[in-house]
Image (tube, rainbow, N blue to C red):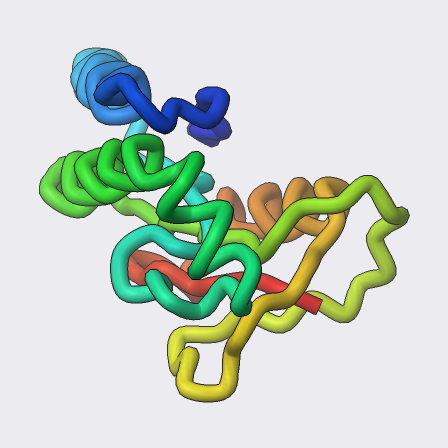
Length: 144
């Protein structure tokens, strides 16, 4: 199962859609015997916070996305605690360029300060995670 839930920026209101829907999804998966969940969150969730680059980390995130990312963090916790076989994919800033196959999947973010990736490349990487155990129970940040 792939979860690509999203929500618009919400600078003033609490966001709960992502974690609430993920809880429901996990329950439905367990009821139906589906064991693999690949969930897309984003750069800035979990331990990738602070790696989005200056504009994202200092302006966009705190002014527009802090409530969304608080819920992304809750969503990631739901996935991790689900007992399912999971992969959490954290794409860098999305763009509409064609994918070109040079996706970098990273856990060590010490040198990551921003980055972009196409929606097409994210989709390809996510589909791969439904068939491979390379990133099982891990949370890679993907970028070009």
